[in-house]
Structures are given as C-alpha cells and as structure tokens.
Length: 278
Length: 200
Figure 1 (cartoon, one colour):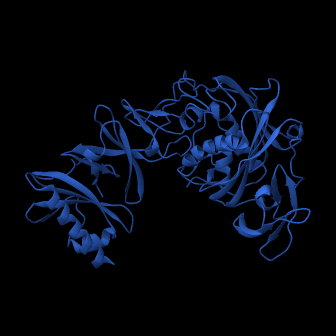
Figure 2: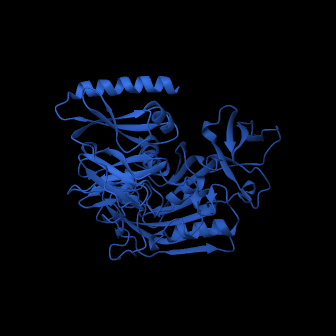
Figure 3: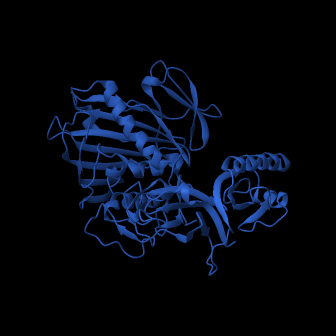
C-alpha cells in the first residue's frame, strides 16, 4: 500500500539550475520539467501538464489533486536573510528515512562529530512534540542540543535550540538558533523528491542570517553535513521506513520520529514505508 | 548447516568489526579488545543501521548512528542520548554462535552443541572470493560442502567454504605447517580460475 502519495506536493528541480528541459522520476513515474518564459513547467509521461508552484528556490509539482496549497514559510521572506540553494544529493534510501534522519538530533555526536555534536555532550533532554490538527503538521519545539560548531558562522560550542516542522510527508523545515542574531531563527529545510520508494533526491534550501560567510562556504558546509548523513541512510535495513512499531525500538529522544511515523499512518501516506514487519 | 568458516582471525584484529555474509544472512563479526569474537545480525535494533559500520570500544560494540553500545551478550548496555537510563533487557542485537579456533572464525546460524570442526595440523593462509554458486563449487570439488574439505596436494591444502549468495562463495584456505604461503596462494588462484571457467 502506498496511500494517497499522488496528492501531495514535491520538489522536482532547483529553479536556478533549471536551464533546459530534463527528465526525472517522481513516485516511480517519469516526468519532464523545464524552464518557461514566466513560470517553469512539469509534464507527466503522457505529455499532460502538471500543477506547478515556484517557491523556496525550487519547482514543485503534484502528480494528482493537491489536498491543499503548498505550505509557506513566512519567516523566510524577512529582509536581510540570505537564501541558499544547496544543490542536490541523490540517496539510495526511502524518502521517509531521509526526513526522519533530518528530524533526529541524537545522531549528531556520532555522524557529525565535532560539528553538530561531540561526546560527552550526547544527552537529549525532553522536548515538546505535537501533531497540529488545524494545520495537519508535525511540530517539535524546545529541542536543545550542545553543538561544537552549529553553523558556518559559529566560532565556539553553544547550546543550540531547534524547532522542527513537517508540513508535507517528504519535507521538513528546521528553525534553529541563529548565532549572529539572538532572537531570530535560521531556517534550514530538507525538501525530498521521492524518485522511487527506495531512492530519493534531496534538495536542501536555507534562509540564513549570515553576513560573514560566502555563498559557496555556506553551500559546502551543508553539503558536507548531508554527505555524512548519506553514509548512514544508504546502510539502514530495511531501506523503507518501518511503520510497524515492533520493527524498531524508539526511546524518548525519538519522540519526533514517533510522531512523524504516527502522522504518516494517520494521513495514509505509505509511499516509502514498510507497514508490516518483514 | 552447522559451523561455517566466516573468516580468519588474523583479518579481524582486536578492536575491529567487519561485515560478512553467510548464506544470504548479513552479519557483523567483531573482535573485542581482549580478543573475544562475536557474530551478530548486521542491524541495530534501534534504527536498522548496519552494526558492521560501528566501532569497538573495549568489550562493547557501538552503532555508528546513535552510539548505542552492546555488550558481548548482544544486550544494549548504554544509550548516549539518555546517559542515566538503564536500557531495557529486551533491546539486543541478534547474536549467533561464534567461536575462534585454530585461527579460524567459525559461525553457526543454527543452534548446535557440536564443537567447531578440526582443521588438522594446518594453519590458515588466506581467504579468496569465488565467483560461482555454492552448488557449483560442491559439484566441482566432488563433495558436499562440509565445513572443511581436504583437497590435498603438496601443501596438504584444506578448504573451508562459506556460501555467500547463490552466485558467490568465500573460500578460506588452510595448509600444513611449513608451507610456502605464495605457493598456496598460487594454487588457490589457479583453482579459482579453473572453477570459475567450468561454472560459467
């Protein structure tokens, strides 16, 4: 069962890199995307046009009937933010595994050693998680973690605070303590294009307050982080995200992941998921 | 199937972990600092990460993803995200029988009360992958794949065959003491070439 996956929005191209028509995969089906005079376009394999939205530096499409408009990130429009197209990383894993890894902080000391985390600062304190019924989004708040180098602009280790938001099954938005501007949040997103159930293209995008780093420094920093994640994501068994509670063992640190899996079940999203224990 | 040679002790020194595959089952084989060998299912119960990518500290194996530590029995002993928590006994890696004997790491996917096989007066030389099915290899060696097959020759060669998939085997070669390792290696490579040609 793959559920109603066709009625959601997905990123399919980075607008700044979309200079000519090209073929790609979405939910296992071939589609074509290309630049337009005013707005970029997307077509299914039989040539019929698909709905498109240009937002957050990317082209978005929906293979079926969108259940709602593409989400917004109002904070990203604030003046002074630098919008960063990070590029893409193709990963041999379920798109849902990629999102779950993004929501996880407990792996920082081991996978992003000395950058996003370091021993002995491994403890994950209790934080708040909810599935918001009105917006139908997963939110985690008051997530705190000790980080040696929280961002390209960071110079010393700090206690970083996070908020995570899952507005679409294969998209997550992270609001994170902004070292140069106390009181504001840096925004780092993970937009995942499901090529198939076990293969995805990850398009990270950021809206940061950072007047020091060059664009290429910010891109390189984030790409380094995602390449470290890829070595994990391509070695998880099974490749699909198990939604059966008996298959994997969560702890309190995994509350966001537990809510995410529960929400996927609730909205009937099974593409890239394994519903029963193998 | 009983005991199968999963590798040579010399290739898994204390403090290391390696991935092996026995008959389609992925295993993490590791050697503790004190020299105890273990063979576990290659999957952390927490998030399914391959344990063979993990790291050995003392007498424990840690998963590389979240640092969960497992003791020699395979029970989770420490979860770094919750340093004060004593992990429930129910969290454990799947462990298989594993025994190091005469320089060979023996594993068994099924319960057995037998001892690992006797390799006679021989020493492990090297392991070599063969690009043919376990069935083909048995046919070419004119025998069932017993844990150790003596093929003789000047170096008194014995082979311990590890079926990997339906297309590949790992062959662990053991030879009498005082043999020339280079000569044994050549003999094994000649055998591989001949077998792979016949199996093709």
